[in-house]
Image (cartoon, rainbow, N blue to C red; front, side):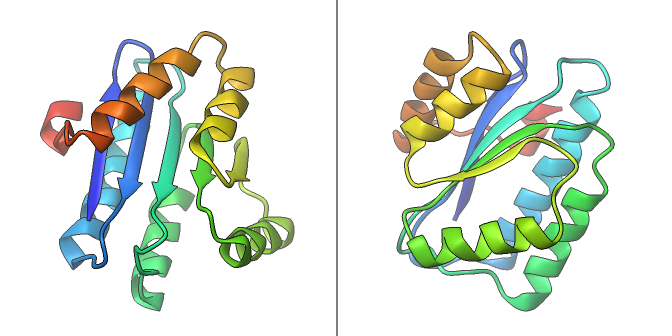
Length: 150
């Protein structure tokens, strides 16, 4: 399941893929959230996002990985993005892919949320506590719809 929360005033958000299954609608919400955050960046600060992948959450299909990459490649802004997963194998694969085709924006892969939040803080000073609060809200089930982000 894909869920997200975002603070428009500071331009930072936290997204989460959780649970043991994902539906096509979850991946579509992710792609739409990328487009909405890109639109927001035209009038706001450049967005910063931490994307967390829970251990039990399955990988998207090849088709959805392609669509998700296409949404990312269409970005006009240069967000600050941290990806969090506790799988050393997945982190290594993402780092290898990043080495072959670097993203055109600051990007890091971390094994825990705190490390990711500190890295984002280095790029967007003053966001660490807010990111921590957003993450706690997200884990508590307080999410925002795409319409609320607009």
